[in-house]
Amino acid sequence: MKRLFEIIYILLEKEKVTAKELSDHFEVSQRTIYRDIEKLSEAGIPIYMAKGKGGGITLLQDFILNKTLLSEEEKKEALAAIQGFSAINEGAFEDKLSKLSMFLGGNSQSWIEIDFSSWNKDNSLGEKFEAIKRSIINKKIIEIAYYNSNGEYSNRTVEPLKLVFKGQGWYLYAYCKNKRDFRFFKLNRLRSIDVLADTFSRPIPNKVLLENVYENNDIVNIKLKIDKSMAFRVYDEFQDYIIDKDGDYIVEIKLPLGEWIYGYLMTFGDSIKVLEPQEIKEEVKKRLIKALNNY
Image (cartoon, rainbow, N blue to C red; front, side, top):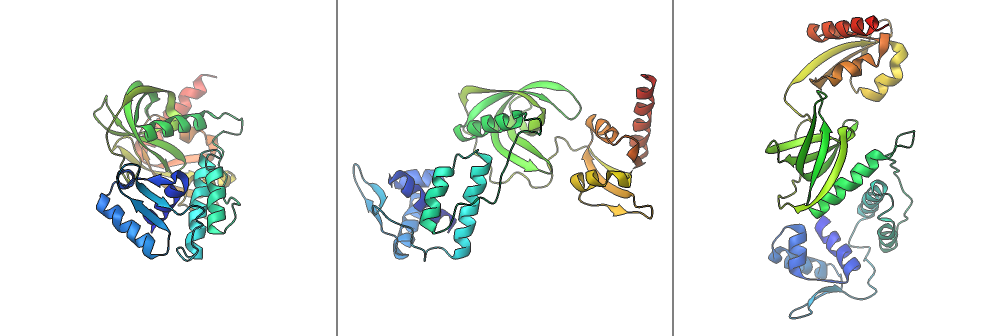
């Protein structure tokens, strides 16, 4: 159903396309496209095919989407999906959303709003997102300057394959030509992005979040006790926790091991205590003593 609906949408936008163009777009055979056209025709869609030079697949002019093709729930879901795309592309889909709303008999009132800028109006994340999105769509190789979770700086040449949101952050999933392997790069740690003229042919994977987004396999289990005064951060940053008899929070989390962990834990000040593991506990203690000596 999803492909049939998208075929109609493509025809509404382009007026005429060839079976080969559709097969390349959906990565299916032309025979499958022909079957889809037959299904649409059987459903009452005035769709036509013409062979030869100048031929192609078209819809009857001034066609309005037949409401019997989609259920009310499917129409709502289709509109909601386009609204989501519009929200993360800063209104790029507004015209399409308006057309679809008219065709589907719904309204274009948005259910979502996304602003990539921080509260101090730094929109660097939004700019990175837009640059990477264009590179993925156009299959352009990019060069990035990056800090990994250990604070190590490197320049990488990568084939950008997918933008991923996991947990509380955006990641770039790419093939790293330096490491000759696939990697996740956190967008906040990208210091610069240069789009090259070179292109790549590697296919875009359908799904990359099979388990967790980590840059390596060194995962540490940490058990924390967080003061009840930090309840707002517990609710913001952790999904699983228990409340002890004093009203404080006991949190158990799995994190990729790296230098960043200690800086993160120390942002809780004196409102946090590392319960396990012992080596993390000792390292935090050592760093706090070193920080105290600075004063």
